Image (cartoon, rainbow, N blue to C red; front, side):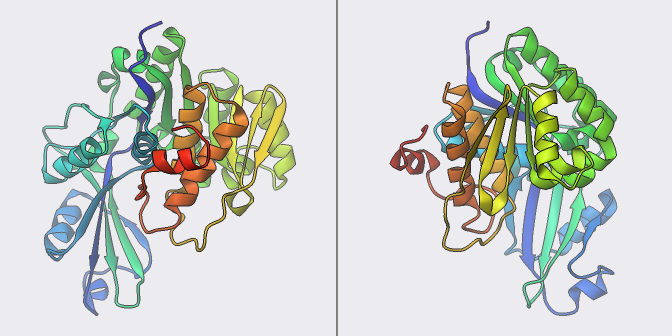
Length: 334
């Protein structure tokens, strides 16, 4: 086995969120429907970006990158693989990961697509209108998957969203192959119920063929995977199919299923849920780091729930508090 360089390496879409307030009439004038997410092309992305005010807020994001950020905040050794372009927003993404201690050296896309971005226009009443351009993040290929990095990670964790582009799908499978070749674990998140609907048969094959060792899902994604409205039925099914499944249940906490054993923990209480966007991403960071450090399922679940409780207490999908310090106060990994 290769020497462990990283506790957790994550692979996914590299996206920059750009948030800006807009004056009345802007949304209508630009032909958008307020409160709706619009998928846009390169020309539209460049046009809208040029019209955003200088006071815009730019924050790197993406589900797997958020998980890597959480691992680093918990004191873990984290790495990320994902594609950005050789442009200013690519600089933002790379600088953000470097600042929080996440190893990132995926080669940039030199020509064609721009760095992926989600431009969020906030109206005076607080309504958010999103325009998402996936661009360079959909250009991830097998050439970006380095066997030395995968082999040096205790756990490699990937987004289900990678299944959308054909070349990224190949990269996903190759990363899992490298992980197993080096006697490491491969994990993935189902990402979204609609993603599950698109690729149900393929996701089940990934799990049943043992291409993937650990499965992460929320209750909606898990029930969608097995086409049932009954959580108990879905849990029994994943227990048969997967080596390990970690399932988030919102305010009810989380559970893990491993070799027929089911362990559940309650959620950590918070004064107010401000923004639940990054809850699943940060749960994964805590759970994965605890597993990489040899902790038991209960400790892993608690660490995941603690990390999730921090990120839902504020706007944004990245932790604002030092999660390592927070976890130590609770006697958890860190």
